[in-house]
Amino acid sequence: MARILITGMSGAGKSTLLAELARRDVTTVDTDYGGYTIENRLWDVPKMDALLASHDNLVVSGTVENQGAFYDRFGAVVLLSAPVDVLLDRVAARTNNTYGRTAEDRNDIRRYTAEVEPLLRRGTTHEFDGRRPVAALADEVEALMGATPRPRIRPFGPADEDAVIALWHAAGLLRPWNDPRADIARKLTVQRGLFVVAEAGDGAIVGAVMAGFDGHRGWMNYLATARTVRGQGVGRALVAHVERELAALGCPKVNLQVRTDNEAAVGFYRHLGFAVDEVVSMGKRLISDEAPDGSG
Ligand SMILES: CC(C)(COP(=O)(O)OP(=O)(O)OC[C@H]1O[C@@H](n2cnc3c(N)ncnc32)[C@H](O)[C@@H]1OP(=O)(O)O)[C@@H](O)C(=O)NCCC(=O)NCCS
Image 1 (tube, helix red, strand yellow):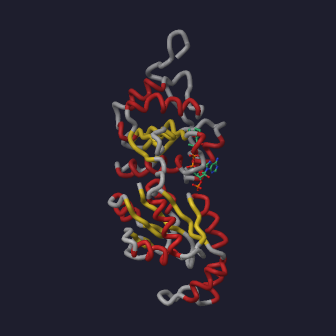
Image 2 (cartoon, rainbow, N blue to C red):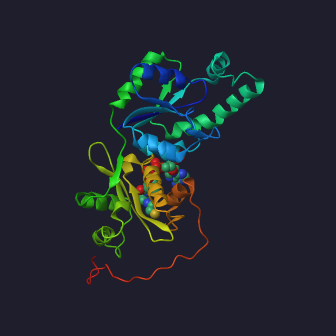
Image 3 (tube, rainbow, N blue to C red):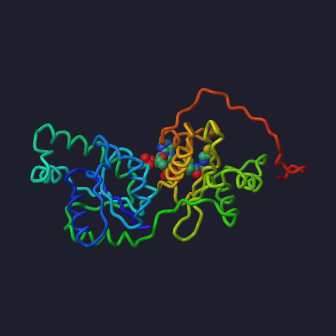
């Protein structure tokens, strides 16, 4: 996949870089224009979904609050950055846009850069210095378009079974009372498309999650990513994928269960907008998966 997102502050050079890429016949979309951005701060989700679904080779630019939810559909996310004084000089010199001329705008840009740029940096795969010549930057973006893709999210297939079980085992998710092979076999009979894996460029399975919609709530189970890719956005991409699929089914809320001592997972889910429901989680086993000798 060769979809690239160029993000960064006003004045970093996104538009200039996009213009150079367009001149080289690369398909580009500046989401500041064309109705892709709502209220100056959010991408219009259906419109961006449609854009990204219809182009495999595309360079998009934009800086919005909900861009992280789209990262799984980009092969690379590039932060274009420059020192704040360079940004201020550039916005002041622009002829096509008056934003940045007043003292108030300039203070906003300083504050916004200090607050927002570090957040952007965390989710990006590359950072380019926006002071470099535009031709050199465009060369790098073109190189990225042919580069190794991010893990691709796709439905589980039977050939993935051993790899997924090994992933769950390594992630500490297996319990004696849950036979993962039986759990997979059962899942393949109900909404099998909601059982997805993340496949790296070399074919390795580096993430998985099993989800479903019971007509009232959506559920997510068995979310895991490989240690080798943790912190790279694969977990976020899997959750975002499930949320999109569930929402498309009309599901109003997604639930999940985490063991209370799994503080890392609780922190991860809180970070993604999940909150603890004040309920007691109860369960009753209907089919035992444990082998009679206790080895299962
Ligand atoms: C939980 C798990 C799936 C997270 O996967 P991951 O691939 O490392 O997650 P990501 O890299 O996509 O992280 C997404 C975001 O969550 C943040 N995050 C991750 N762990 C966090 C924590 N404990 N507290 C706060 N934020 C956290 C990341 O910084 C990242 O933030 P950003 O996208 O805003 O920059 C992974 O650690 C795992 O497999 N754990 C073991 C299995 C497990 O416990 N599963 C849950 C079972 S219910």
